[in-house]
Length: 97
Image 1: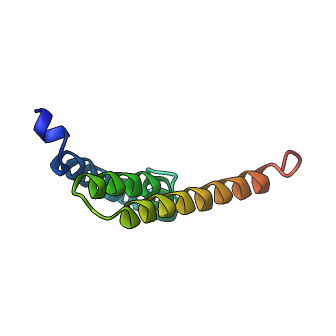
Image 2: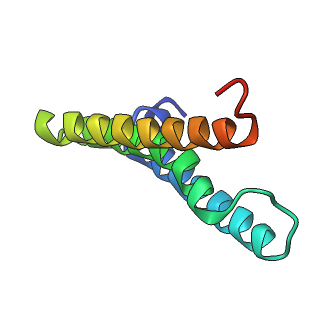
C-alpha cells in the first residue's frame, strides 16, 4: 500500500475521480439539478487538478520547470476563479461590493 501512495497511480486515481466529478456536475447542471454552470465547475476543479499534476510530475522525476509551471497555472486559475466569484458577489449585493 505504501508503494501505491508513493507513486503515480494513486494520483491518477484521484485525477480520474475529479474528471468523473466534473462530468457528473455538468450533467446535473444540464438537468437543472446543479446551480453551477460548467465554467464555474471547471474553475473550481482546475487548480486542484493542476496541483495533483504537479505532484505526479514530481513523483515521476519531471523537470522542476514542469512542476513549477503547473504550480503557476494552478495559481492563475485560482485567481481567475476568485475574481469571478468576487464580481458575482458584487453584482448580487452592490451595497457591500
